[in-house]
Length: 248
Image (cartoon, rainbow, N blue to C red; front, side):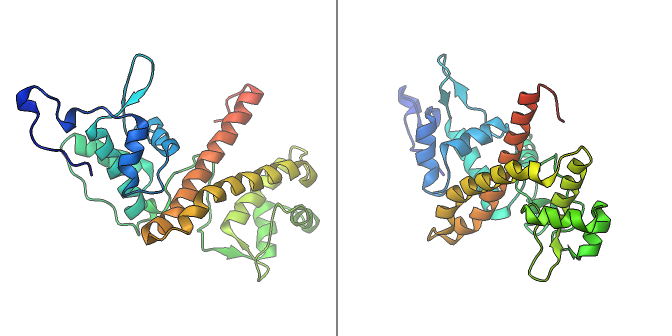
């Protein structure tokens, strides 16, 4: 929290509450409590409508003390409660209306995802694992097709030879693409790109996982989810732009 010194307003000088801060100054204010925060993170929260800084005629962002406190509140709800942004936005809107809402329990199903990726459907619970025959039935694929998916690294079985919910989702998408004539060999570039994107995310979260602060280490997983969601959105937007069509 920012400390607001007393005095100033009565003698014609500006108080601390009247200050307008650059995005760099905001970063410095927040990093004392949130060492993992970045300028990109602040810009992202602005893009999501969680804070609305003023703009100078030349386009530079200027944040008020209240903006900084609001950002701190958002980051605290993400770090301590693992809330998705839509829940945080609803909570802030209620506060703005003078209607404080209790924060959902971190154990609730809604709070397990930091960001929702609207284009990805998770039909199976994360803990569910199914066998090979069940995967073939779920995708409508033949055994030799599944063998090709595995050979190209698109699908991978667990140590017990079974498959988790994420792998089931991938297999269904690969099967759907196959109906358009796209074979596993055509999807190698997609897999390679995904691996590179995962590497970029890992570069960002690795320092958080090594941090001495336990809360920061815990926040690393939520950060990874957020970056993964943004990566999916960027990929979809780039494909849409390249094709000149609306995908969603």
